[in-house]
Image 1: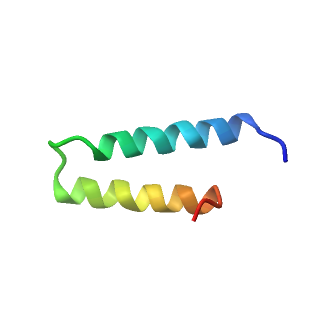
Image 2: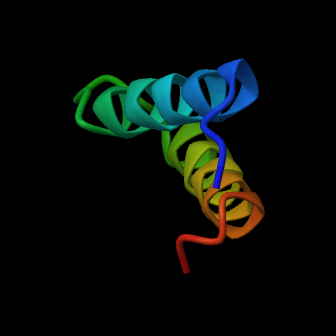
Length: 48
C-alpha cells in the first residue's frame, strides 16, 4: 500500500479535529459537528 500526500493530509486533519474536541469552550452543536466529521473521516480512512 502506498502512502500518499492525501493520506498525510487526512491524518493531520483527523488529529486537528480530535485536538479541537479537547477544547472546553466548544458548544454542544460544535462538538456534534466535529464528532460527525471525525466519524466520516475515519470511515474514509477505513479506521472504523
